[in-house]
Amino acid sequence: MKQIIHRKIRSNRKPDTKNMKNRTLVSILFLLQLSISCSDDLSFKLPDVEPLLSLQSFVDPDKEFELLLTVANPVQDSTFKMSTDCTVDILEDENTIERLFFDTILYNWGVINKCYLRFLSDSLIEFQEGKEYKVVANHPGFEELKAISVKPASVKIIQVTWKSFVGEMPDWYYDTPSKKISGISKGIDRDTNLIEFSISFIDPDQISNYYRLGINLITKPGNRLFDRRIQYASQSLPNPCYMKFHFDTPYPLYSGWSNPQTYEILWNDNEFNGEDHTIKILVPGSSSQGSKYIVSLYSLNEDYYKYMVSRWKYSISEDDPFAEPVRFFSNTSNGCGIFAFSSLDADTIEF
Image (cartoon, rainbow, N blue to C red; front, side):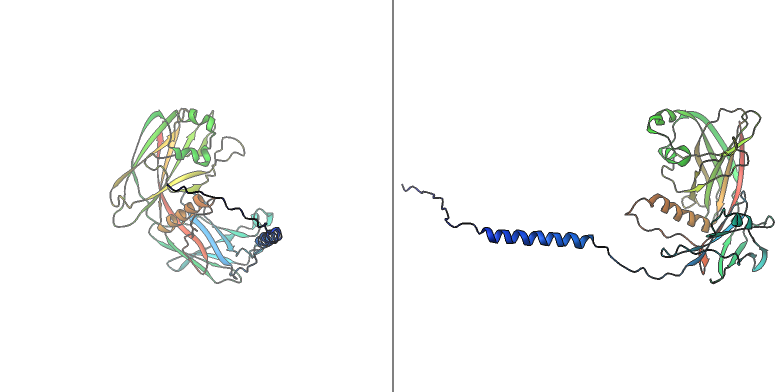
């Protein structure tokens, strides 16, 4: 039997240290050049974009009418100042019903920084449900800006029922600005007195309808009237579409006190068009005797709803660098912005 012997072959050749040093030096120089090139600032030119005249006006029946006029500037020009030599008219059936007046007091006092103008009504304009209205704005250096919108018909509340119990709010409620709480107190606050309101109405058929809800709590601590907008939530809408709302109360509890911002839920009639509908919401229970809850059901026109949905999409994605860009809805021509209406029906529940 033959034995196979493995032998380790050793080379007497010495390593080429000079060539190795040269290769190492070349590698170091390459990496150094790469790191320098990566740290160089990239230069690029933004495309030239003309500024656009922009307006914003939400005509709600329970708020003072106002219209804000500004300019949507390209990012490379943030120094544009508005001119007071401009006009804003409200038209009905192509007939001017009022020329709005410019709020010079705030402008002259420097409360507004001349980047936008505020226009108000000399009298209470009586916008009628079902009618179409047009706003026309003229500002030096811009084309005439126009926006057309229809005031929707209000949808009447037919019944409000309620029940009181001890329980917890949906998670969404604790992420709203009026109810930011720490993790330590979260468990305690979740076991509290609640009221569930069931708000019933008949949705008009053959047309699309859009809704929003607001809740006011009125109490009398001592002999003082206290009226505030409160945050609510719904078990059936764990992650609702909402709009941000700030209620300027005429009856604050303390001097200089203002309500925190609330999130008011938006929804449409895609799933119940033309049918009876009931939305159930949860609110914190009040221990004050003689408390009143005012339930406000807003009917929004389509422009109002679409703009608020785009604004909501932006607000929930603005901190996400990977989110899809959001294009804000606009119903203007020769500019951008929104001119939109809502109508209102309300019911008061006394305890």
